[in-house]
Image 1 (cartoon, rainbow, N blue to C red):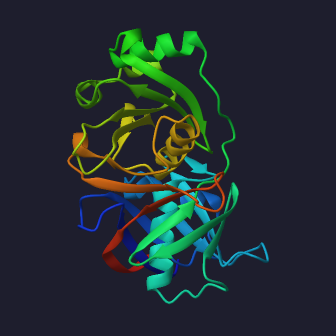
Image 2: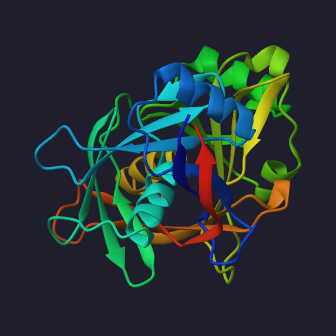
Amino acid sequence: MNRRPFAQVDVFTDQPYRGNPLAVVLDGRGLSTEDMQRFTDWTNLSEATFVLPPEHPEADLRVRIFCPGRELPFAGHPTLGTCHAWLEAGGRPKGTDVVQECGIGLVRVRREGTRLAFAAPPLLRGGPLSEAEVVQLARGLGLAREDIAAHAWCDNGPGWRGLLLHSVQQLRTLRPDAGVLGGQFVGLVAPLPAGDDCAFELRAFFPGPGGFSEDPVTGSLNAAVAQWLIGAGLAPAQYRASQGAAVGRAGRIHLAQDSADASTIWVGGDSVTCIRGTVQL
């Protein structure tokens, strides 16, 4: 075992302990997949990442992303949180943007003042869900079928099933039934009233120990939902979303369609370092 530089970062917030925490091991060289998974499970966080030298010639760093029980090809808040920790620790990109290499490929991260934003990767699967899936999801969420205004696959690594609800009140009060929903990744979005500082509110549920877990603030889901909603004309080309109120957080996610390339959606947010030191691994 060696002492390795470590940071615990709160992502999609400028206030410590109000976003989504991430464990970042800034030197993952020599660690096996089993080592990484064991440490991730021990942290009891939604994700941990491990920084490695890049293998792709265009990349500035390589990142392996783990959640409890498995490795992920891509996830949003680990992308921003790892980049924040890497830059803070002295990382220097080759160009203007940081290029992170992960399981899904190369992901660009740009600096927007104090905020970082990543270019959402292409969807692995889009288009509407089947009617049978929508009916099952409604039953598992305690909703009527008519409560769902629209639906789509939002799969960019995690296989999110996205539902747009008519009512934000229903979004805030629903309780998922893990027995009905099984091992599905479910993302919910509802519009907020005019005059709110955000256009939409989201909740994200995924399989976890003992049933379903709720993610405080989810970059991959927000990325895919923005690609869906903006592409379908259900959201403006630039908006802000909130997530995490149901679990005591106040996440803010900035979504924007690239002005020069309409196929690119930028997903941004602030990050703050809450713990900095070393970890024995």
